Length: 348
Image (cartoon, rainbow, N blue to C red):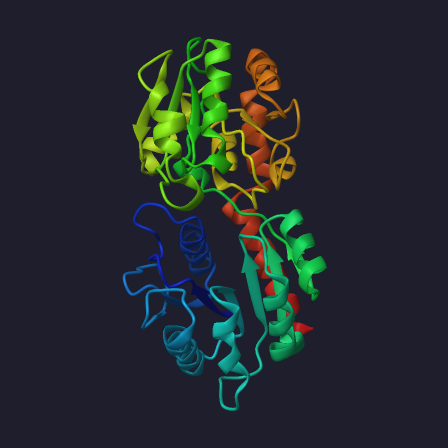
């Protein structure tokens, strides 16, 4: 099968540090190449994923206007050169529009994958332009359902995945193992709530992640986080790479990220479970699809419930946390789901 990937223009595939979608696409490319498929990629010029054909975006922004038009035409040229059987799109819907013009490389199916909440107007417009050849995938059932309600069309729920080879299972941790907050440090991720829970529980908390200090998060670090650092076992360890993340998550008593938004999926939650580490978060977004209450951690609605959850961590089997990922969120499982869908789209 000839599979064309297109990914947003701002981050290389794979990413140098952060970039969830870019990391997923790089892993999918490795798996499909291992299975003997022929791959092409349209992405940031510094990408080096294992593909047979690479086409860099001329503009490394996701903006519209002239830059968007240049990238849309670049995608059309890539399609003309590669002539895919299917196009798996993680980039911009608007960049697909030149593909309906005559001589654009065939009437192959296109699967648009969403790792964020879809915009109904854009989905509706794209369906009118692209027709039945365009279908959609959401990284969780809640994203797929929102897309179906807002924009219509055919939607499939296919989750994100983790690379188990990069995440070591830890069957036990030290009795005084810390809690870990690992995410972007901004209000919607709930770092301030994690601090409150840790302090009330008398437990150490290690905070890792990149600080967000723009927009609604301006002043958040100075106001809600910095005053607590260095006191009551609350520490900031900075950003982490894959190796550091593996160690941090694996040695934690629990990952504590009490979100305050509709999380589309949240790859780090599955990564924690892969290490055997229970998750304490909130029943919002896709979290109920990842964490079964009382089996892989706890979904809480208040600081008080969070403190109670910390006290019940001994009830959680770390082996069951790992099994949750092995049975639902591995590269092999998700790659097979996409390939089944590609075959369906091609032969329908």
